[in-house]
Length: 495
Image (cartoon, rainbow, N blue to C red; front, top):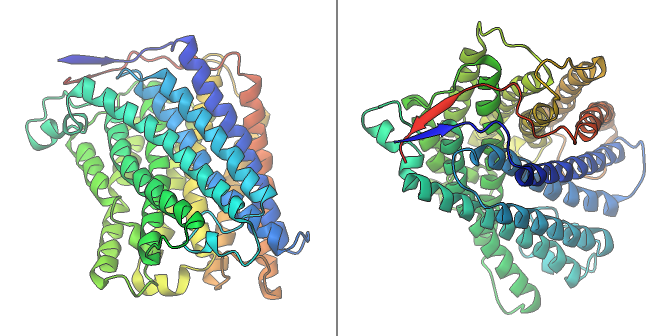
């Protein structure tokens, strides 16, 4: 038997590495938001930068937001998981360095080489640009993605090593002895269960992504090396969908760890919790076909499988997390501050973002809605209110000088502005999708422009709120890393 005891004060090296991640995330996130605002302003005809610049920013925005969400989730997961298993700080730093190298390569490929084939880099587009970008620009973009992917693979392999050393197998760190046998109360804590799930699915997704990137890089310089375009698209969307789902599965660890410290109620890994995470470990690997429903060349059974499993995967983790959060908070006397409010809001964002995806995953709806702004409405809700809400909740938690410190009025105003503006921004996307406004178009018809202008206004307000969050975190960097409010919570688990 082994006790999983919370360690209140991380060592200075670990603190520095987590803060380095968060500063990087804050800077890149703000830059990507500005790029998103410029895109909406172009569609709204407020500015005129031209189609080429629009698609370059769209490529950077898509790849950048996915990557930075992954980096944010990794920082949260690593910070809390190291309380239970021995992780390598060197590997953690290596992932950040490789991420920054990859970002520089992507920026060079797009801003200097003018690559604008979108984050999906669908084959054979990178190699057939019709003179819009050079071979080297495409290689820099795809090579940058590959370098970032290698960093994340190293990180997850280190986590896998640490989990197996501590628990003996993934089955035990997922809590299968308690799930399929007698629940003796010694199941691994939620952080360990979630980290195991993310490690399994992300390694699979990243290996698929790295494989197709390597094949496409070879094809770029050896055109006789042919790739099946349908296989390439399937691998790209498998990688992309798994990775972006994993971002919130990593970030939700902040909810599992921080809310119990505020309420003095431990989040227990019961059978329902363990079953939900095990089910999603399997299902998240099979739900990406809803991006491929228009590709009639795929086998019909494959598309139907994605439809059915997509429905099934929409709820297990979300339901147990939402219900668990409500039960932990209910009559707990929780003291609401910026961290707890943002974390609670993030669950609303996650739930709200799942609903449009659930609708879009319906085959009959997908044929009509998937290539409209309905889809950006879904994933902006999921990411902006969900993942980003968890990120800023974690950042406020780390930066709080002590548990009795009152939040400034400006912070609370920024919270309400963030919530209202994010909802307005995402609802503008969803309503535009309902009106059949297509996505990935630089220029919109006159009747669509009013929606774009409303969306641009809400985007500007979101950035204003986020700027307050980031400035507050940066001004507290010297104090960040303290774990408040401290709670003597402990989990028992087999090792």
